[in-house]
Image (tube, rainbow, N blue to C red; front, side, top):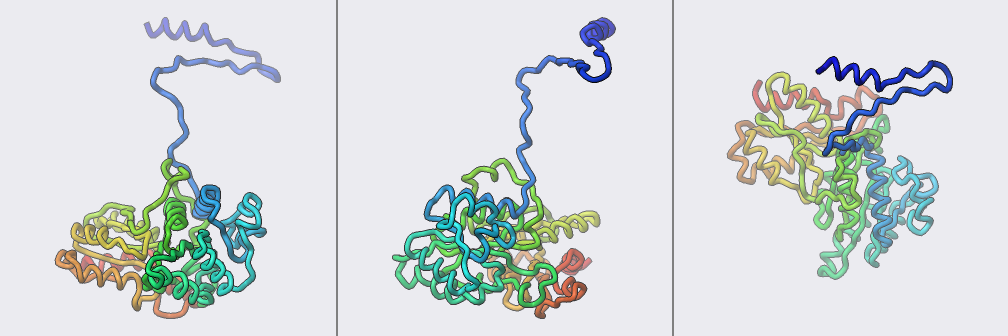
Length: 371
């Protein structure tokens, strides 16, 4: 039977002559019913492109949304986040501003009070210090001071924390600063899905939202699921994500340090230590319930952040765990991994030693586990 099938197949295949114009023999195989070829469900998307998609989709969806900031229009943004949006939506929806953070942040807050939904880009959150009165006293407090009659649906977004070689005045993390203030929501994405889903949720939220991005992640590609490619994809503000399941220790981080935690978890896994990695996503309101549930399971806690240690995000997490029911499940004191308690140095070797590295996380885990 097999020999007969091969002879039949050989008769169907004709050898065409070689050379120009020769036809390539085509062998059609019978299709099986129920099978079809389809594109892969996930695609690789950089954080930059994910943010661009989110802005594009929300500008298209709601005519009240507009973007303003330094170089966001004709130059396509200092980091090319707004690439192509000015050409598509024009001067009224994508607006270049003077170098005056207090001025254009005030314009954005006033527009939000009047019913629009501005996205205010700071070239770096270090420059938001020039506009902090608008962010805190005008945006964050107005809903409360007006007994809820005036909402301020605005998003303040831009790169936050350490970049590379930009020294003390351009390397600060503001997660603890803005996370301290009632009236604000504060989000801090790590992956492309985080960036897209959180930005879209922030724009649709009726409260002022501070979105702290990482300049060092803009060019990093991440897998984006088929669900996240939808125009209606949003990530709920205030919900953390478990990036890796584990049983021995809980690692909690936000923004770029999430990647460091996953790298450290891979290293420790080879030594028999399984780390559960939690991506906070939101600083305020903090999803402490997810952290508590993990600590109950692992009995150990390590927090990781790029900001300074005093009164930081990690300090808040440790305090909340100590005050809550998960404290009784800890088998050892919680350990914090943070940036060094100094202004960021310019020299690369000093900069590297001022930012949490994978080796620092591995060391902290072994300290927590006493191994």
